[in-house]
Structure formats: structure tokens, C-alpha cells
Image 1 (cartoon, protein in one colour):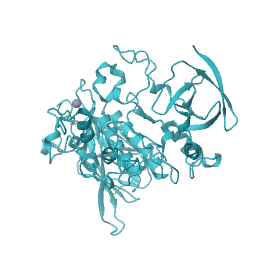
Image 2 (tube, rainbow, N blue to C red):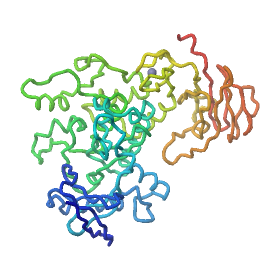
Image 3 (cartoon, rainbow, N blue to C red):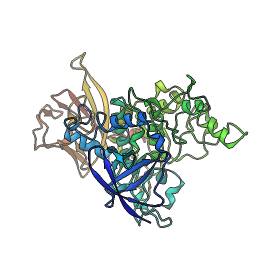
Image 4 (cartoon, rainbow, N blue to C red):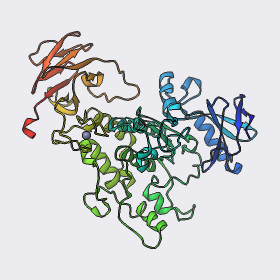
Length: 489
Ligand SMILES: [Zn+2]
């Protein structure tokens, strides 16, 4: 039976909530919804868990570590209105503490897009369930309506946003401590992602929460030391370094729909639990490890090498070099930047039936790694070089972008050392058009851009571009055009 009760918060608000007989329950807390479902109120399964340490930690999370509230209103240092607004879409951050009837927390409800609607599955009744990523990254995919599944581009979008959210936590000295398919919701249809269960954050200088973690996302060193006593100095607890393992696992799952460590290798015949503990802990082995193929499944649809050298390099560091050596794992910032650079190389697959729809361009790639279709020839490549500070006049290649008709260009294409993030100006500065078989760069707003013959391309003017041409910006960027990959085919 449902009835409405009222919670009194620390800030003095009286918030009604609907009490139900079987509220959704996680490992630590259970949840009640506001009558209009605009916020949720969570209480602890065991009220004794809400001890002094927990309360101090949650107060710090809601206050001085809160990136979803501007600094001027009591939020984190350096956060302005615009950034607070941006991060309030990235996290479901708690915003108040319940003091009566008992200790609890209040958070905004997830946006609607993170709940399945009634058309989400022709087979299962998923209506109202939240979009945990395993619905999209496991065999469950086959039960979902096609419109829910997204494609490679939206998988990269989710990955960029998640990396950015984790990067922001780590920059502030926080660690999530329980990143997993349960605590990150994704909407592949729109490429959106939100981090939830923020109250288990590890906060500098305060007692860490007692988080058990989620199978498949706990770092190998934590799994290996779980059996040790809590006071044993060899016991390893969740930290930013262990978040980086979970982050890499989630990104790998979003892209390939499989777990990077779960393969055919059996590490113990004593029991399934022992095998699991070893396979995800002490003996964990990347399924795509090229030096030890004993955990490699028979059929892999798409591999890390198909994602270009930036992402394949990051995955190798995460799952080969850094799997058992946390200091070598890529940081969240490296993931964010690597994903953003890789985004520039997305090329649409010409096969209308390709379920990934996109692939990552590389001059060596002839076929879509997901459907085998011959790679599209409607794109050309722009190679961006920056002038070195030490040797003026000398340029170094920094990144490439695969462009086609109507591809937009932004400030980071014409100015050195800008890698787009949440603060970057996204004003369109120029774009590419294709006319017949010829390509043109149309300059909308770039000042100081020069054609290969040295002529100024003023804003409002266009310039034909062809293989080998080089454009210059007076800010120290050189753009080399590459259209001819025929010799590689
Ligand atoms: Zn394809």
C-alpha cells in the first residue's frame, strides 16, 4: 500500500515522498520517489551504517566537493554557473541531507531518457527500469528494440562523457570507488551517460566508505586482497587508480559488447568462485593480449586495433601494462582526450545493414571491422600540424580528422593546443563541402587563414582543397589535405 510521508532536510525543506511496500533496494540503501518523481530520497538499509564518518563524508560531497553547484552558492572551488549546469547533467549528485524521520540523502531523479519506455523491448517488459549498461553490452541486446541500441559513434559519445565525469572527480581528489554497470547509466540512442550513487565517493582526509564493489569492475589488486583482514596493510581499497580499471572496462564494454577479462581460460577447477576470483584478480588476462592468447575467445567481432592507434594504445596500457600495475593505467583525462581525438576519425559505413554504422578511419584499413564492407571513399583526411615552440618554423603532426560533405570545423582545428572539453567554445568556424568529386573548405569565421598559394581565405570565402595542399593559420597551425589513399588499396 502506498502512502505519502514527509522528510525534513538539513536545509529546512519539507519534502514529501511516496512510501511503498517494496522500495528498490541496493547494497547499502533503499529508495523512495517524490510524488512527481522529480527527486528521490534514500535511507540506509542498516541505519547504523549512517555513522559519524558517513555523515561527514556526505556533507563534504554535498558541499565543498560538489561540482553541480557554483562555488558562489557553496559548491566546489572554481565552478561557475555554466560548469555547474554542465556537471549536473553528468552526475546524479545528492543535494540535501534528510534529518527526519532518520538520516538519508536527497538526489535529483535521473532524467527520463535513462528509463526504458514501453516500446523499449518487443520481448521483455522493461517499462520504467533504469538503463544499466549491461542491457546494451551483453547478450540482452537482442531483446531491445533497434532504436535503443545506438552505434559506434554513440558508444564513443558515452565513453567521452564518462571519462570526463571521472576526470572531474579525480581532479578534485575524489574517487568514485564503485564505478560499474550499475552505477553508470547510459542511453546509447542519444550517446548520453550519467554517473549515479555518488554518496560512496572516497573523499580526501575522511574515512572511505565500506564498498564491496561490483563483480567485473573491481580492480585485480582489490580482488586479490579481498580475503585479507581489513587491518592487513596488504589489503588494497578502492581509489582513483582502481576507478581507472573500472573506467577502461566500461569503455571496452560500450564499444565491443564483451568483458575484456572474461574469456575461455580456466584458472581453477576447485570451484566456480575460486576460478572467478583468480580470473578477475591475481591471474586476470586481457582477452586480446597478443603475447598470451590463452584467454582469447574464438570469434571476436572488432578488436582494439580496429579503433586506431590512440585507443588501441590506451586499451593496451589499461589491460596489458597496467592490469597488474595500477600506476601504468591511463588517466581519465588521457581517455577523454584519446576518445575526442578518435571521434575526429569516425567514418560512416556505407553498408546500410551495418549495426555499428561507423568505423574509425586509418589509412591501412580497407574494410569495416564490424561488417566487412569496403571502406567508404567519400571522406578525406585533414592532418593538423602545430608549430613547435623550440624551433619556430618547424611543425609537428598532432592529430588527423576524417571529413566529408558538411563536416564542421571548430576553434580546436585552427588554434594549437586546444583539445575540446566542457568549457571549449563550440561555435562553427568553417566547414567542408563536397561538390561532385571536389572538396572545398568554406571559411565562416576564421581570421588569418591562408590558401596553399598564400592568398588570404577571408571569412565568407571558400577554397578548393586537394591532395597534398597545405593551408596555414597565422596562429601556428598547418593543415595538410590528404585525399589519395588509392596506393594503399
Ligand atoms: Zn560496417
